[in-house]
Image (cartoon, rainbow, N blue to C red; front, side, top):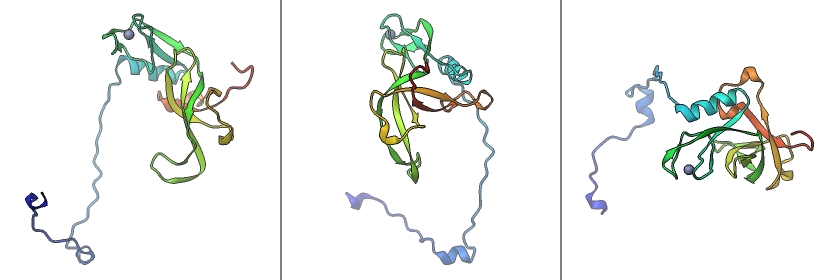
Length: 172
Ligand SMILES: [Zn+2]
Protein backbone atom coordinates (compact mmCIF):
# COMPACT_ATOMS: atom_id res chain seq x y z
CA UNK A 1 0.00 0.00 0.00
CA UNK A 2 2.80 2.42 0.88
CA UNK A 3 4.24 2.03 -2.62
CA UNK A 4 1.18 3.71 -4.06
CA UNK A 5 1.65 6.92 -2.10
CA UNK A 6 3.24 9.61 -4.21
CA UNK A 7 6.21 11.25 -2.56
CA UNK A 8 6.70 14.75 -3.79
CA UNK A 9 10.25 15.99 -3.78
CA UNK A 10 10.93 18.84 -1.42
CA UNK A 11 13.51 20.45 0.81
CA UNK A 12 13.14 20.19 4.58
CA UNK A 13 13.07 23.51 6.39
CA UNK A 14 16.30 24.17 8.33
CA UNK A 15 16.93 26.59 11.23
CA UNK A 16 19.57 28.24 9.05
CA UNK A 17 16.92 29.04 6.45
CA UNK A 18 15.02 31.04 9.06
CA UNK A 19 18.15 32.75 10.46
CA UNK A 20 19.28 33.72 6.95
CA UNK A 21 15.79 34.94 6.19
CA UNK A 22 15.35 32.61 3.27
CA UNK A 23 11.97 31.90 4.77
CA UNK A 24 9.52 34.72 5.07
CA UNK A 25 7.78 34.72 8.41
CA UNK A 26 4.71 36.90 8.61
CA UNK A 27 1.90 37.28 11.06
CA UNK A 28 -1.57 37.44 9.73
CA UNK A 29 -4.22 39.37 11.60
CA UNK A 30 -7.35 38.86 9.60
CA UNK A 31 -10.22 41.20 10.30
CA UNK A 32 -12.98 38.65 10.23
CA UNK A 33 -16.45 39.68 11.26
CA UNK A 34 -19.40 37.41 11.19
CA UNK A 35 -22.90 37.15 12.51
CA UNK A 36 -24.46 34.01 13.86
CA UNK A 37 -28.19 33.60 14.18
CA UNK A 38 -29.02 31.43 17.15
CA UNK A 39 -32.59 30.91 15.95
CA UNK A 40 -35.87 31.28 17.85
CA UNK A 41 -35.34 28.58 20.50
CA UNK A 42 -31.71 29.20 21.43
CA UNK A 43 -32.21 32.93 20.91
CA UNK A 44 -34.79 33.16 23.64
CA UNK A 45 -32.89 30.66 25.80
CA UNK A 46 -29.84 32.96 25.75
CA UNK A 47 -31.95 36.12 26.22
CA UNK A 48 -33.62 34.56 29.28
CA UNK A 49 -30.26 33.54 30.74
CA UNK A 50 -29.29 37.21 30.55
CA UNK A 51 -32.36 37.91 32.70
CA UNK A 52 -31.34 35.20 35.16
CA UNK A 53 -33.91 32.66 34.03
CA UNK A 54 -33.72 29.19 32.48
CA UNK A 55 -36.30 28.49 29.80
CA UNK A 56 -37.11 25.40 27.81
CA UNK A 57 -39.91 24.35 25.50
CA UNK A 58 -42.42 21.54 25.80
CA UNK A 59 -43.81 19.11 23.26
CA UNK A 60 -47.35 18.19 24.27
CA UNK A 61 -47.29 15.00 22.20
CA UNK A 62 -44.34 13.24 23.85
CA UNK A 63 -44.51 15.51 26.94
CA UNK A 64 -40.79 16.17 26.80
CA UNK A 65 -39.12 19.36 27.95
CA UNK A 66 -36.51 20.50 25.46
CA UNK A 67 -33.58 22.22 27.10
CA UNK A 68 -31.92 24.34 25.80
CA UNK A 69 -35.16 25.54 24.25
CA UNK A 70 -35.79 24.32 20.73
CA UNK A 71 -38.85 24.91 18.58
CA UNK A 72 -39.01 21.53 16.93
CA UNK A 73 -39.43 18.09 18.54
CA UNK A 74 -37.18 15.76 16.63
CA UNK A 75 -38.93 12.68 18.08
CA UNK A 76 -42.47 13.67 17.12
CA UNK A 77 -41.35 15.61 14.05
CA UNK A 78 -43.55 18.55 14.94
CA UNK A 79 -43.39 22.08 16.28
CA UNK A 80 -43.31 22.32 20.08
CA UNK A 81 -46.30 23.74 21.95
CA UNK A 82 -45.10 26.04 24.69
CA UNK A 83 -42.33 27.83 26.51
CA UNK A 84 -41.59 26.54 30.01
CA UNK A 85 -39.63 28.36 32.70
CA UNK A 86 -37.51 26.03 34.78
CA UNK A 87 -36.02 26.46 38.20
CA UNK A 88 -32.34 27.30 38.65
CA UNK A 89 -31.97 24.36 40.97
CA UNK A 90 -31.18 20.77 40.14
CA UNK A 91 -29.57 17.49 41.03
CA UNK A 92 -26.07 16.26 40.19
CA UNK A 93 -26.44 13.29 37.83
CA UNK A 94 -22.75 12.73 37.40
CA UNK A 95 -19.56 14.72 37.82
CA UNK A 96 -15.80 14.61 37.53
CA UNK A 97 -12.95 16.17 39.47
CA UNK A 98 -10.69 17.53 36.76
CA UNK A 99 -7.12 18.65 37.25
CA UNK A 100 -6.86 19.86 33.67
CA UNK A 101 -8.58 22.81 32.07
CA UNK A 102 -10.54 22.75 28.82
CA UNK A 103 -7.25 22.92 26.86
CA UNK A 104 -5.78 19.98 28.73
CA UNK A 105 -3.35 22.12 30.75
CA UNK A 106 -2.69 21.08 34.36
CA UNK A 107 -4.41 23.21 37.00
CA UNK A 108 -3.78 23.30 40.73
CA UNK A 109 -7.35 23.79 41.91
CA UNK A 110 -9.59 21.19 40.32
CA UNK A 111 -12.70 22.05 38.34
CA UNK A 112 -15.83 19.98 38.85
CA UNK A 113 -17.67 19.56 35.56
CA UNK A 114 -21.06 17.96 36.15
CA UNK A 115 -24.30 16.99 34.50
CA UNK A 116 -27.01 18.81 36.40
CA UNK A 117 -30.58 17.63 36.03
CA UNK A 118 -32.68 20.78 36.07
CA UNK A 119 -35.69 20.77 38.39
CA UNK A 120 -38.96 20.54 36.47
CA UNK A 121 -37.26 19.39 33.27
CA UNK A 122 -38.41 15.78 33.50
CA UNK A 123 -34.85 14.52 33.60
CA UNK A 124 -32.95 16.84 31.25
CA UNK A 125 -29.44 17.61 32.43
CA UNK A 126 -27.09 20.33 31.30
CA UNK A 127 -23.33 20.29 31.59
CA UNK A 128 -21.90 22.96 33.87
CA UNK A 129 -19.45 23.46 36.72
CA UNK A 130 -19.85 22.93 40.44
CA UNK A 131 -17.92 25.17 42.81
CA UNK A 132 -18.07 26.60 46.30
CA UNK A 133 -17.67 23.16 47.82
CA UNK A 134 -14.85 20.76 48.67
CA UNK A 135 -14.62 18.61 45.50
CA UNK A 136 -14.46 15.48 47.61
CA UNK A 137 -17.81 16.36 49.20
CA UNK A 138 -19.64 16.35 45.84
CA UNK A 139 -21.93 13.37 45.37
CA UNK A 140 -24.28 12.05 42.73
CA UNK A 141 -27.75 13.09 43.83
CA UNK A 142 -26.49 16.27 45.51
CA UNK A 143 -28.95 19.14 45.26
CA UNK A 144 -27.47 22.30 43.73
CA UNK A 145 -28.48 25.82 42.81
CA UNK A 146 -27.19 28.23 40.18
CA UNK A 147 -24.88 31.06 41.15
CA UNK A 148 -25.55 33.80 38.60
CA UNK A 149 -23.21 36.53 37.50
CA UNK A 150 -24.32 40.01 38.54
CA UNK A 151 -26.93 41.25 36.07
CA UNK A 152 -24.65 43.90 34.55
CA UNK A 153 -22.04 41.24 33.69
CA UNK A 154 -24.42 38.85 31.96
CA UNK A 155 -24.17 38.59 28.20
CA UNK A 156 -26.75 36.00 27.18
CA UNK A 157 -24.70 32.83 27.48
CA UNK A 158 -24.69 29.70 29.62
CA UNK A 159 -21.68 31.24 31.38
CA UNK A 160 -24.11 33.83 32.85
CA UNK A 161 -24.38 31.09 35.46
CA UNK A 162 -20.95 31.20 37.11
CA UNK A 163 -21.31 27.79 38.67
CA UNK A 164 -23.63 25.61 40.75
CA UNK A 165 -23.24 25.29 44.49
CA UNK A 166 -24.81 22.93 47.01
CA UNK A 167 -28.40 23.94 47.71
CA UNK A 168 -28.68 25.11 51.27
CA UNK A 169 -31.68 23.94 53.22
CA UNK A 170 -34.33 26.62 52.99
CA UNK A 171 -32.63 28.47 50.08
CA UNK A 172 -35.19 27.64 47.43
ZN1 LIG B 1 -42.42 15.35 21.00
